[in-house]
Image 1 (tube, one colour):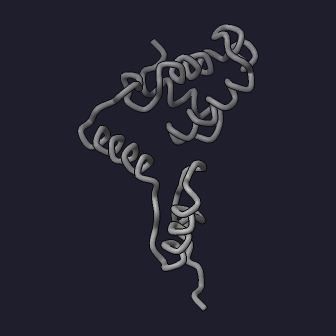
Image 2 (cartoon, rainbow, N blue to C red; image 1 turned 60 degrees about the horizontal axis):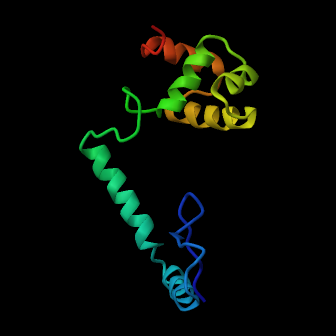
Length: 128
């Protein structure tokens, strides 16, 4: 019997939930044989994003190329000392959306808390 193999992230493949049963079975056999599998539509999106990154394109990101316009607005509000509740009110979004966006922002800029995010915003010229 073969021992299943897993990548460091705990996955060796990615299929969409609308996969046909016969394709799911084929994917399982492929994974069981130690190979990886990736749905073609997902692979195309990944390759498109990689091409944009390789070409220095920024897509829908801000001038820094790291944050979207909305994420930039939230970061600026954080740097001003605005609470999540007030950010939500000012930007017409829910407080839980602010929290979710902050997690994404922190991950993208490589910080773990508001204090470091504020320092980043000041250092990178978000505060004018």
